[in-house]
Length: 466
Image (tube, rainbow, N blue to C red):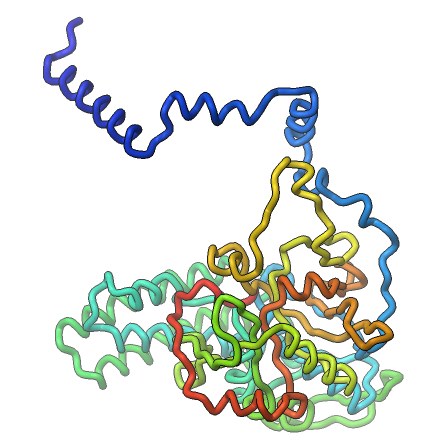
């Protein structure tokens, strides 16, 4: 059967267009011939191909020369009791912030064990983030859907990730309770399904608020609608996480676990006695981001956990300056909130973060030469996980050799629930540290008096830690 003339004409035009695109930068047959010669099919190539066909890259790239017995001695170490477990949730920021306070509480009262309820502040975090989204939609209701901020809001209506600022904002407003006053649920340990459904509902509400705004609804009407919508979100959270207690009894126990006293508390009185109510005023966040100027203060738009809270603000410093403050804090037996790009060069079986763990270059026959600044600029690295910095090992000259963090992946993960990192890895993949102001030099504290440069919410460097 003959093809219609018009079909042949279109086919010819399509081929001509494809050839034109090839000539302007596509892969030509001559280029492909040259490119394909990079794989010679030698016995060595075939052996690598066969190995990679049935084995993971990290297994084959594991550097055998780096498998010597791991040194687990630390010259300076803050002791802790009990490893927490965030399970299948992105709450590392919350576990880390609470673990910093927990260590102080255990030391102050001599507890055999102790843990704050993580689900309690998480409940309020999710409700406050829902309000942050809905109020952001109200604030931008006159902007088109194509507006960058509006797009970002609809792409990020809710998250279980966060930063230390969220710990300060949520705990400072709602207080704390002990683990037994509000225990974990399936949805708190496995947040994805709950988050998906609440996010879907929030997006629906967002469109309704925009429509009301387009139709000229007054601010009071929009606020009334937002309150009604938050009632729906509260109910969804209560069904999944439980209802946060407003008062409770707490049985305080001694170092042997024997009951000493039964105390009656509200979340705020419990924070006052067992937590740290000075989270907003006694701590500062430091950043090592070589893609931006050092000794400057930055603020991230919409990077807060409450609409009426604070965007997280930090000073960008060379890593050497940050290490000095970290060492001073550890020498004074004070843990810190620490975040990094945890997935890079992690040997999860040993719990070791070392740039020499894997030899990708020898396996794949090429090099990976970007430095930290270039990895940030190309979206190749950023802060992904928060943990509690608790130890450093110093050489005879006082220089750090390795560091250790308390993780929140359970006691069976890594090295007895911890991760050990070499100082070289620290330089390359550490991003944020939160320290008490008493360990911060005056010249650094003065930098926080600057008017911070505000960066957009969608800046890739500032994704929430999970």
